[in-house]
Image (spheres, rainbow, N blue to C red):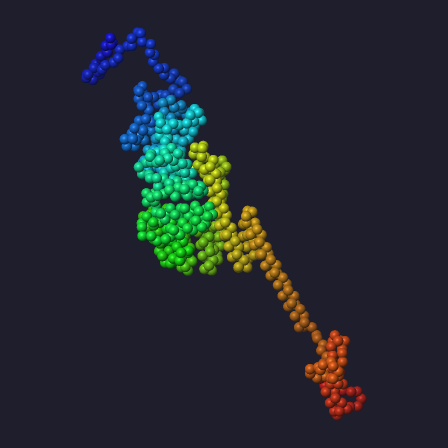
Length: 569
């Protein structure tokens, strides 16, 4: 029969407490041996067991948190998970006998994602994947989709993609949505606030940012309901246009932007994003024959409604710079300068805006301010190149830090794409820097300062600009040589003219100053060796000599008088 339970009275005088009696003598069950005092993990077990496993059948923190999340108690679940993570981090290199870090970090990330804390969510998403990789490397098994590692499933990757997209971590976002599509091809585990169109649009933007243009176009083509992604069809067309232009397919890019620029009465066809509104407005004015007033009005409207559209400072600076360039092309130079200055107030390190402002100063005959703007462009580009090189060395040879903790299966591809993106940014900075150097050198040449122009051209470094630098230096030196030659020849000519003006000259004139007759013998002309064989008239054959022979004045005695008209100096 059953052995009776021993009954004792409670300390407060209430109902007696029942305690089990000693086990029967025939029982062979032995109690589970606990950790030895002073053992290797005694501190860890004492910290964890007192909080979570004091009872034999008490559930794990991850299981309790998962149940609370299913009920909607996000804050309470977050407290349980964070307490368990603190207990695990209390002991260095602590093993996880009853729970694992991957599931705890995954649940913590899910809680932060539901609470709209994207920064903390991204940190725990990355930590969960790192822990899963470490466990796979240590145990040889991959984190399963069920059990204690259940949070790492399709919903996990959906929420990770959304959080990373909001934080601008496009490499992780693209990889997360790729994993989610593999685990859930029919989109049955989408979170309530996500739709297939929103997922495809976010994935397309992330793929475009990491230079995976073909995959981005595939995602953009699957955006059936743009309004579900908080965009219009014009925004999707603008995104596709950027992909086609980056791939070199300018015909398709022009077709996309032209379709976005066409007017439509349906609200779903309109462009919503501020930067796309600016692109469409400028394209409509430059390519489709739109009015300048409409383009300026649309750009100014974006700036006026920046608070309603949550326009960031960087995007606002780009819109102001675009508006300034448009007004400069229309001749509104004062308003253009004001917009340039406002743009630099939002983003003072925009080398493109500084370059355009320098060109505006040069167009308004303020070359001193233009030279300062060009020097600022060179300074910004050099500083950005130094920061890029320093970050590349600190990261171990390249790649963005946002892609260093992604799973191994897609790490190499993402890092390579990020390296290409960095190289493209460096190339654009190099082109802007070279243009600023060339413009400053041209200003110095125009003001007659070739030595400063040569110093400016020396800043053109790199093999890509070597030919341009040599051509400009040769042109400057050639103009200087020609100027020196002109000065030398001018001085020599002036000296010769001065010498001729001060030297004595002798002229002999015989007879009258009349036209000489031809050398046919009719006028008595004879050839002269002193004049190179030409015919000259003899003195005795001239009309004056014939008249003087019969004139009484010349009939003198003794020496004959000199005929009039001849002179000796």
